[in-house]
Length: 396
Image 1 (cartoon, rainbow, N blue to C red):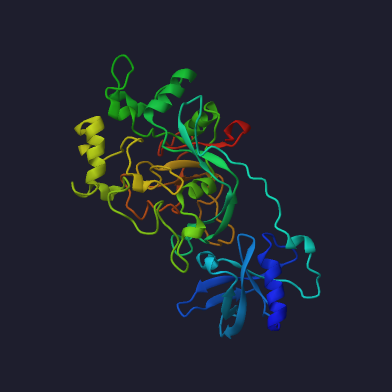
Image 2 (cartoon, helix red, strand yellow):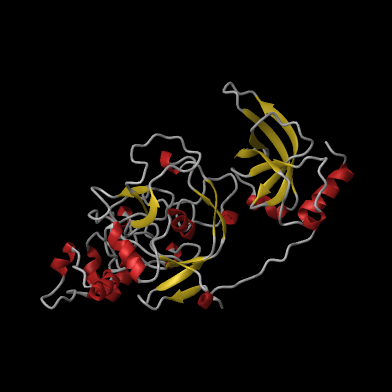
C-alpha cells in the first residue's frame, strides 16, 4: 500500500478531476455485502498497489484491503474494503461499477488536475411538435442503469448505458392522433375501428378516440416519419422509464417500475387494476368524470388519464401499463448475454411496457417482449410513442 501522504496526493488529484486517462479496467463490483465490504470480480490476480472505483467516468473511491475468495470455478473473486472520497458518493456505489488502476510509473497528466470546461446547453423541458401537435418531454443526456441481472434471461446483464439528449412523447399515440395521420396520407383505417365509427367516418364516442392506437410496426414507423420523429430504441425507451442511477438504492434490485422498485396497485393499467372496484378507484373516478361511466369495462384507458404518481422521473405517462409499445430495436441479446434464444435476430422488434391484460411482472420496465408474427406488416399488437432528436429551435 502507498503511505498516507502519497495516497492523499493521488486522491486529491483524482477528486479534482471529472475525467480519467491512462487507467486500465481490471474488474467490476459484483455484489455489495451487508458487512460493508464489496465483492469484486477481477480479470486476473490483482497485483497493483492501488485500485480505484469508477462511477460515470469519475473516481469515487479506492479499494483499501483485498482478500481472495476460494472459487472452484476458477474465477478471481475478492472481498474488498473500500474508502469513498466523499460521503455523497454512497448513493453511486452499486454493482457493475468498474475497478481500475493506474501504473505508478506513468506521469499524471497535469491537464487532468483542472476541471474541464463543459458547455452548458439547456433545452426546453417540454415542447409541442407542429405536425401532430403532441407534447414531448426532454430526456437529458447521461448514463443510466439498463437491464436486470436477476430477472428474465433476456434482460441480463444490468449495465450502464449512455444516451444523448432527446425528446419523447409524454403520452401514447391515440386513435385520434393516428386518424389525423391516416386522413392526411389517405390510408385505410385499422379494421378494429369499424365497430366504433358512424356512417360519416367519425368515432362514435370521445372515449374510443382517446384510447391508444394499436398498430403494426410499420404503421407505427410510418406515423413517426410523417410527424418528423422516429420510434425509440429500447435503450431510449428504458431510460425514459427508469429512475436515474443516482436515485436507485445501493445494493438493492434496480427500479423495476417507472416510479421505483415496488409495484403499487392502482397506478398502472395492468390486470391488477381490474381485480376489484376499489383498486385504482381514484383513477377510475377521474376517467368517469371526463368520459362518463364507460370505464367500467376492463380494457385500454384514454392516454391523457393517469395518476401523477405513475409518471416516470422525467414525466412520461403509461410506461408501466395501458398498451404495450413498439421500439425500433431488433430482438437481440444484450452484450455479455450468452443465452440461446431462437427468437434472437432481425425478425422481431422489441416491444416494451405493460398492458391492461398483463400482470405486474410483465409490466416491469426492463421486460422485453417481441412483435412481428407473422411479419411486421401484419402484427397489430402494440401501441407506440415517438422520439425526436434535439434541434437548435429546442434551446431555451
